[in-house]
Structure formats: structure tokens, C-alpha cells
Image (cartoon, rainbow, N blue to C red):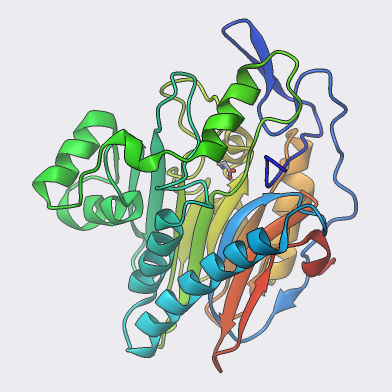
Length: 352
Ligand code: ASP
């Protein structure tokens, strides 16, 4: 199976690129959009200190080999352990989400860092953002080409520049000046993503690959929350396209008064719906618990705008919600007592 995750768009949103109609989010023009079934992932898991995701989509049992399953679970587990050991040493949730996302960026199975998808010009353009719920500081990078770990660059923008977001060449140059490892584009190459690009450019193609964006949310001993998201975006995206992942309030948000959130899904719609901040605002203004606020945005408001996706949302008390309007959401979490759980298949995420 070539594409790990396929994502349906309710509205069957399509974009025409160089004369080729390509389904933006896993559905080619003319293909029947797979409407999401019952809202999923609506219940909350208690006593969580760290959670990660590896993208929203559909991953039915039997659709990947046991070896692929083991690789995905081990990638999630390594990310969770990296973040967990940071927290266990008494360090901040910000350090933990950065550590967890770096592991997923280095893992070729996920669409972030090594393994990122290709744009229309067969390049990789990477987006990432990070936010500290303690003081609402945030950093983001968009369209970077040569930075091995965009999440660390996003953090550097937050801590070493007066800005929140940097893009393109300037961001890569900023990385170089600050000692963030530089890498050539071929480092990001994987055969699977290359094949997906060729598929997406074929006018007769069925599902272009979507999903596998990564993210993390955590809460530390001080009850400070943090969130981070990193992605290569969408296969065959136009050069210069930026999705929700680096947009604070859309793909990432963290506020100690409410919640830390990382989103995955149809970036354009998550931007228009200001999804991550909307969940936080619902919690702040209506005192809704995290599972209700997150489910409302993911299962009602985002689909009403014509797209699908999912989020991981963790409140400062350790309640984790993972709603998704796609059939599945690859994710995992660590509890306060050190239990690690990974969830790959559609039937592993609770329905709510
Ligand atoms: N949200 C990401 C973007 O639009 C894609 C994804 O989550 O799969 O760039």
C-alpha cells in the first residue's frame, strides 16, 4: 500500500495544479469523498503528561504490514519516551514537546523533516511552530528548505529573535547563524513520498497522499502546557503554499488557563476556522471541558467549513482529547505513572 493515510474531504475540495485536478486532501477529482462516519476520539484520557500525533486519516486494520505497523508504533514510542525523559528530569513541557517532535522529524515514516512530502516542483518546504502556555510566547517557521529540524528553528525564532514567524530563505539563514544543523534537500528524500508525488501528478490518480504531519502536547510539574507541530504540508502543494501547522492559533496553540493543542488535517480550513485557538476560546469563555470543546471544533465547525482532520488537546490537569473527523488519527500518549499507549488503527481511537 503506497499511501499510509488517506483523508476524505466532505466538500470534495479540489485544486487545479498545472492543468491537473488533484484532490487536496487525499481525494482526487471525481473520486467519491469518503464522508467521515461517527465522530471519533471524543472521550478524554486522564492523567496524561505527554501526547503525540502522526497525522489524521484512515488506517484500517490490515492496510499495512506487521513490519510497517511496528515501525510506526516504534516511532511514536521513541518520541513519547524522549519527551517523557525530559519531563522526568524536571524540565519544561516546552523542552518535552520539542524533544518529541524532533524524534518524529528524524523518522522517515512521518511527513515532517526527513520523510516530508514534495511540492509541485519536487522540493520540500517545511513548516513548524511551537508555543509555551505559561506566557503565550510562540515561534514558527514556514517554507524552510535546509533546516534538519524545523521545530528547533521555530523555538529559536521564539527565543533568539524579536519575531514570532520567519519564512523561506531568511529562516534558513537565521538557522545557519544560530548553529541549527543545515542540510541539503536530498536529506529529506524518501522513495514513498516521491512515488506519491508522481501519483498526484497523474491525472488518473486516485488518492494523493495526505496526513502524517506530527505534533506534541505536554504538561510539566509546574502545570505549564506546551504544544508543537511540524509538517512537510501536502503532496504536490503549490510552491510557497503554507498550511496551518506554522500558524499560531490555527495549527498550534497553548495557554495554561485552558489547553495545549496540535492539529492535523486540511490546513486551509484549519486556518479559516482558527481551529486551535477556537478550542481554547471555547474552554475559556464557556468553561467547556477539553473533550467537549475539541469535539465541537473538530467534529462540527471544521467539517462545516468543508474539511476533515483531528487534534490532540491536553489540559493542565492531564485530560487528553483526540477527536478526529477522519476515520482515524495516529497518536500516542504517556500517563503520569509512565504507561505508554500508541494508537494507529481506526478502531483504536475511542468514539465519543
Ligand atoms: N495540516 C497540514 C497542512 O495543511 C497537513 C496535515 O496535517 O496532514 O499542511
